Image (cartoon, rainbow, N blue to C red; front, side, top):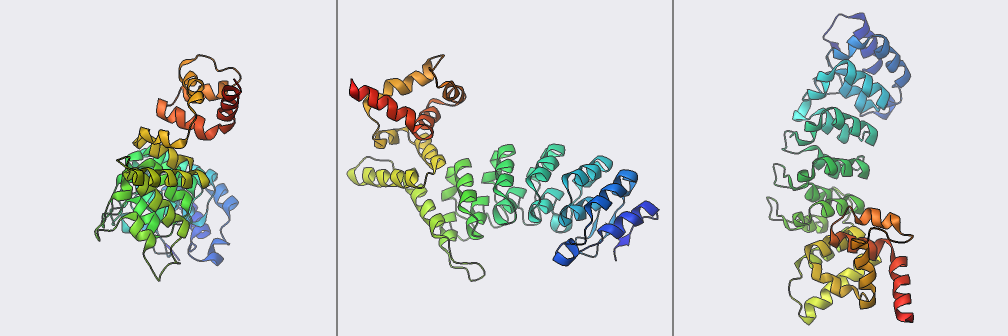
Length: 334
């Protein structure tokens, strides 16, 4: 049983309902979300009473344990509204509530709510000098939506390093994260591909590394990292480099990794010349940047207006190949 740091009857009622171990599926199955909601709704003061929980997270407000047990967004909202101080608490390992929620695989809506109430949590460090984004990149239970959300509100976090000078991309590759997570981290900060950690190892090195504690390396992730390193290091236009760039762009188009093409073009605009774009199409593309109206393609115009010229070109090339094709056919027919 937990040791309750309060004599309030309402605290007793709440803690008896949530004194479960989130690491045991049998205990998680006992969690009654509706009953907990009713108790907090009737006795919000119970949310502000700490307890030393038997699950090993130390002394904490009910918020942390409810998050770990899979409590609904409605229950989390009630707990935070009744006790905002709970969002500032440090748990075991110096983890913030956001660290803890990500490690426990909380739903995107809960992560979004927590960060909206306390945006500074995205910069908090745990005892390993890791920010929440490091954990989102590491834990399979944390979704791609959560990772993208953290990047969107703290883009600089992609370059943050932990106590082993590892970025979130290092951690993603080290933990065999999905290719979607790896792609999102690359797009947010391509230069991290070349960062070396305390072992002088890049993210690619970790993706290739044999680790018996994990499954074998993911071939598609290794191939992606190799190709992104190649396309971002092409500087000259010798026949050899041109061939390497062409093959890499072909690979990116084959796997439909549009973000990778965008990153490559933004880093080196001259790569556009390798896309085999017919010169007849350029007037049509340029018109998208200058005209106030684009015939029946107003939805493209709306997006183009919000992007730089390079990203606009990218958008037209890969998002709307039908527009490019039709323009080319008309030009050729003339």
